[in-house]
Length: 197
Length: 66
Image (cartoon, rainbow over all chains, first blue to last red; front, side, top):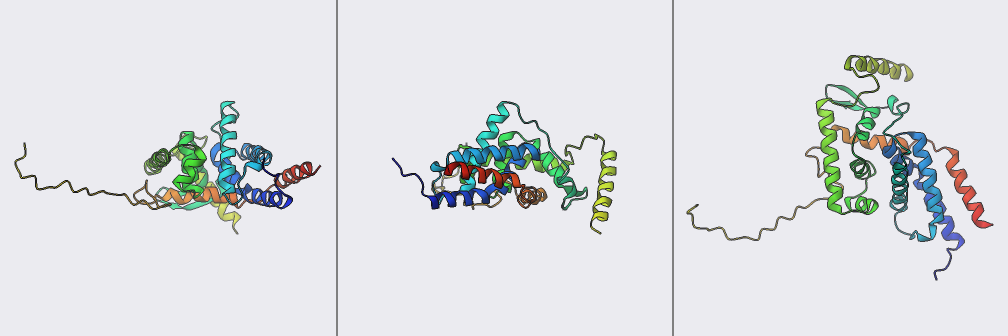
């Protein structure tokens, strides 16, 4: 029978858990899109992680450990249809990414929308490796699959996004036509400029 | 059928694809959106944290002590 973790272990656990919360939020937001739902998912993850804290091996990656918990919670919730392929643009909309090609600036909301069109397993693989900075091996452990599977999913996700960006076939905002889209972009750009003054 | 003397020894030339960790393997040249993807993630990481999270941990901590 293992000893119950001493107070210092528990303090360290809490500290480490606190430190990964921003990463859990980022991963959750990428997975399910909506900030409010993402934060619910993180709360759920914290509760589960806390309850399972004796299973955490000190010295191993808290981020990887909690990502597994978050991912499993997400999949369970998905099966219950709690999340839809929905997203919130309010935050992302205002942030411009470096100008992309001739099409004008790539907005984070465009990026996010494109990401959300990917099948969930490719999306999570790309999030882990391309955004979270996990190695393929770590991502494979988190997703409980083979390294080759992760590589293949990341490759396909990248190819799909690249094709989407190259062809300009980004899913639009609620307005379908490109003219309206451009008008929105112009308006947005002036809003951003006005806001930075 | 090819005539040539099969000079070619089966040179067990094992091509080990040296794939560096964290390198862009899937994409020939890092696509422009790759930085956007990281920013998407980082933007959330850098957001101020709602108090609800620390409150939850405090509460769990207190419950554990009782």
